[in-house]
Length: 273
Length: 287
Image (cartoon, rainbow over all chains, first blue to last red; front, side):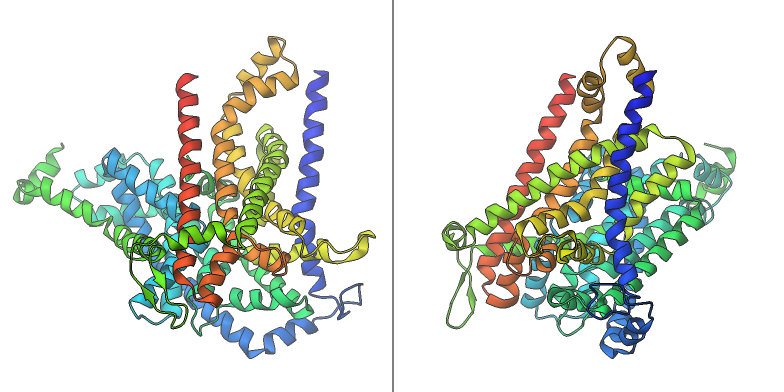
């Protein structure tokens, strides 16, 4: 009993240190977004000035609008790809399924720079214009893989007996899908959609390679961050952080924290097994 | 099946099995199409370009089957940068494993609301913008508030940045693997007199192996091609593989060389992943 009490406490200390380490830098960025001192080396009082300055900047506004449109399109396309693929995977033979899983896994694990460079060559070679469509095409390559994993993980927990019952009661496959399968998959679809939206809103590499003249918000921020730390950058970063926390809380609230959390944890880990 | 189905479905009944199979097959077409056009075709194009040659005066790429771009890798000034980039991601992966394991183990021992709270605390940083998290590290490294100089623009800064941003990706699969371990196994090891370190070494770690491998792949493979972290924390002085590849496409315009670099990275990582997975599979077969 004695070491039972002792050991978790050692683990607890490490856990606490790691959590502080994970959150402290983000909190500093959030605080600095309100820091009245322009040089940021000490606290210069509370101000909302950097937010209004950042938002008045038309390049920030247009980049944000580009990013939102790209993220919405990526979300829609990823779900259109992932939902049928997950339905298919349930009935597919083991070999075909393994093939799908392997390509899904590859799309996530392969360093993004490799896929982005290849896409860049493809668009150049085919003489297609770089820009928003190219960025969306690139995002969907990996975001649809995340969506597939989340939805497939949920699908694996469904027994299929409800759909059989629907079919027995005379429902045509489409109707059985719409009335039975889809509602059962809804939590996974919501999480997948929010995950895709967040990842698309956050992507730098693919967007930078395929941008042409179209600048997404992360590409714009990336350019700013590379060269200087300014209060405006902190304000934009704080805004982005709040936005992502809202999507996260939204998904968690819609699903209940427990099942939402387990879906995300599942998504991150199934892929590697 | 049931009577209702038989009576309602007699008309199409005869054709339905093969028809059904075709209908089910079409479901995977969007995924196959998108992957083929926007993922596999670009990779094939990269391979083709990597064997091509570039005219350094006109910057036109001519096809051919020359391995010139590959031999160039070994002669280039980039060789040390490539080596350092591999070492940095390897080091960061090991650091993530060492720091992440106790955290994942602790979370797996908790129950109920406390466990949920801790999991959310790991997922929130993972969900937070990668760019913002990388940028957040500059605060830790830039200011001399600790009394020391600035650590920005050094390999250490880049390594710390990888460690910081990828840590949640290590903790989550470790947690899933540790959570699956039957508490009875832990207890019986203790009852049989195994001391904590021995229990960890002989029971917990072997059982957590799938999670350890998954975590190492999720951190090690993508971080090798890292581009954003060295750009922000390395200040353009500490290059990683991703920066070298990006330079070929975005500034130098040497597509064959950039392609050769990208293909080499892909090949090396694929071999590493296959070897690791094969090794873990045979390990499980023995056990």
